Amino acid sequence: MLNSEGERTLSYPIPNPAPLDPPEEWERLRGGCPVAGVRLPSGDEAKLVTRYEDVKQVLSDPRFTRQLDADDAARVADNESGGVFNTSMSSALPQTGEGHLRWRRMVGKWFTAKRMMALRPGIEEMAERLIDEMVEQGRPGDLKASLGFPLPVYVICDLLGVPAADRDRFSHWSDTLLNMTRYGEQEIAAAQREFVEYMAAHVESKRAEPGDDLISSLLVETDSEGRGMSNEELVATGQGLLVAGHETTANMIGKMVSMLLADRRRWERLLDDRSLVRGTVEEALRFDANPGFGMPRYITEESEIGDTSLPRGTTVVCSMASANRDESVFEGADDMVLDRGPNPHLAFGAGAHSCLGQSLARTELQGVLEVLLRRLPSLELAVPAEELRQVEGLVVGGLREVPVRW
Image 1: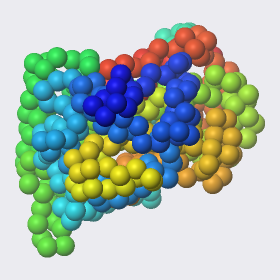
Image 2: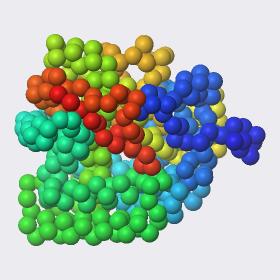
Image 3: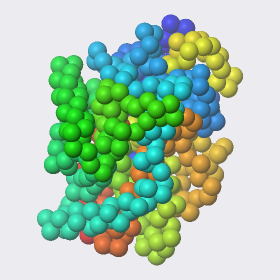
Image 4: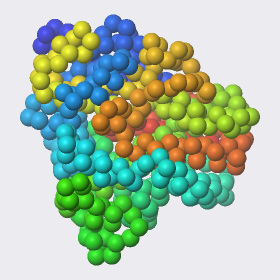
């Protein structure tokens, strides 16, 4: 397909040839077309950035903003809302400047590495219980349904003070927010309305009866000028953390274990040397070829990426996964090296908008891996890796299920 300037335009996202393998186009684009024209599921056009240095620049440069609700910004999804980057949830929270920094400072107090590490024993205890239930149900099991999905849900629900018993509702609301092609407009609107109503009621319940959770804390938290969060900001914060806090980590648990079991020498090496767990989690994050859509940005003034000049109003999509396979930064980038170091991957982004919950994600991934190695050393995939089925139609990437034996 050619655009108005006669250049080839790729359909994006670019499909993976197999669930755990990267598209061949990544290498071609990095080498010859690092700022490529793409057509999104919405039909709108954007620019795709695939090289490490370019992706890091875009994510760190304040000219590349998250103002994706601008009139001329490209919409991601093929529905009226345009997808998760254009929802009322994103518009309720400041996306740039001092307002965003204020929000991050207030929420970030709950996500320090020290505080997240204090959760590690509870995370491992929950993983033990979930594995017990999976083993009791018999072989083969679905590691994603039995462990990968419920564990992060329990953790984020506990942090927010919401009942984990509502996890199936959270999953549906989350899927509609992350939708690109899976749901129709009416279904999306109904689910998002229900989600807002649920979280608004939760905020009010915490206002009446505070607990030891993040929402209760934010109700009384103030910034350096003595200002607290508005009710709208509290609701959107709860929604955002609930979605981000379980979808991405749930999918990453399944993908990480699948990567390690796809070449069993990796699993065996971990069994022999548990000190590699921390580095293995970082390498799995770098090596992940199925992370989903990537990170879009909107340019508020004419800008340059490498040798390419882009006009104001351009939407740029960053492929962190392609950047993480850039041979100019990672030697043997297409090999999974469990003790790789240094490993400056961009799985959590970069700059002022890097993932707020990355310490929590690392803690969960490390804890789950430690428990699996201890409890199920004979773990193996119950189907060939190439027969694993990918999640489709959502902004996040993942596997629909992870069939395993032990």
